[in-house]
Length: 297
Image (cartoon, rainbow, N blue to C red; front, top):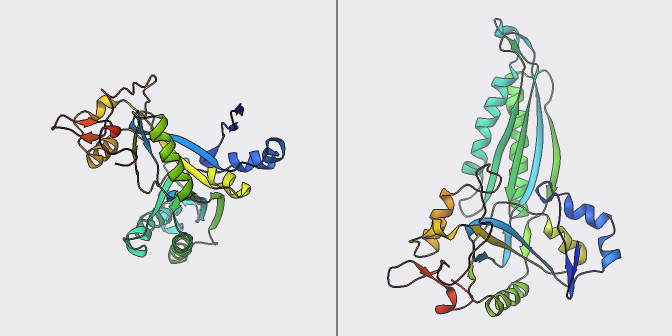
């Protein structure tokens, strides 16, 4: 944390596991440094350097991470009929979980269910007695979140019963934190400030972002409005020829995203108007926002 004019700059740790903001609050952040009137934050993203994405309302998803332990009956690989194979059982669960979003969540709602880890067994000729899954769930609305979590539990317990598992599976919450909801007035003020002070920066509405951040906990604990945005860090050269936001989105889709080992940043961003992507001009690519309508794209 460093002091700044009229506020404090916080280098928040461990946002990916929803622990950093809470740890700082529990350590006396507001008692030691005062309660903020507004919580501002940013996160780098594979947008072109010189582009900022900000939106009103829900912008970053709530996150729930689950550890699921499935119990089977172990045995020799040559005698599977004497076992309850937890790998087959867990595989059925993984497959069935793919229907939570596609068949239980409306197309007008948003949710993500990802099985990011699957561990079972140590030897090719031994059927293990258990398997472990780790899940990441992203939602924006509490009602959708409740339905998704209930569906996951129903599927896990139902598949275990169908397979004849010798005991109930265990479902543990590793961490959970809420969606980031941007205050409309704070975003309006921020957009005006960006437009006035950074005229070459392009402002876009990135839509819902299924990544998660625990910065909202700071705002909730302070009773203060939140304004959180994404900061473009990709080389604008990759976006050459992009004519509008849709073109930009297609380029971003093809770039390595955050957490990819191939994700890279432009270390010395060049944000002059000659290289800034934004709005169409005579079919030659994108030009700075301020040459047309400042503040939105």
